[in-house]
Length: 291
Image (cartoon, rainbow, N blue to C red; front, top):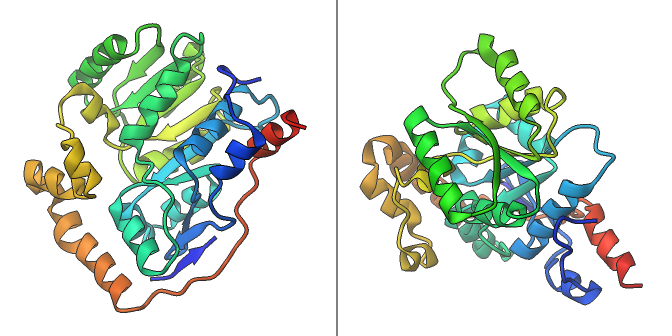
């Protein structure tokens, strides 16, 4: 394992000092060649706000989340590695990456898992007139998810939704449906690596501002999958809670991937090098606004 450091919808009330306070390092962290942006949730949300208002992007911005499972899959899946490298923003998800950072003295600033972060994005959209489209999950799960979102976020515009069980031959029809709905944000919940490779393969065809790969988010938002209590999450043990509730679907992650990852971390097969963080124009924009 190699770990290396590598006009908004709602104007953010950030000063140059507060932005600087939420950019904790000048490095990106990389695990086995998979890099993520080591930033705070406030900074990540500010970047998303910028993506929602910029005019010049040649294709939708892509935002992905990486965890131990993503790193494990990417070790043998070149398509996923390529998709993650092409993403505009990659956020750390889960206690496994935090553990690796702690052991190697490159702490992860914040656990920005999609289940917590995406509702913050939807909160930004609520009442703004900007819309979201949901792609993924089984039909009954998706229907319940949209119902719950309407209750949780009154005023959120849901431009449309489509379940994630479709063939490659239906792809063009799916994309037409999304483009006809013209959402500002597209949430794709089809699991890793399918969602990441699908987004990158089709992003030139999609007319939306941001595409997020959100994994099992719709299962959580629909209530189909229970969320771990907050105290369990605060201990970094949500993976154990999910295994207890879904042993058949999670056994390989818990019994193979996580132990393998932890073992490689603690036996010292980890090296750290420093790389500049990728520039995000949103930071420069806020700094200039304060001059």
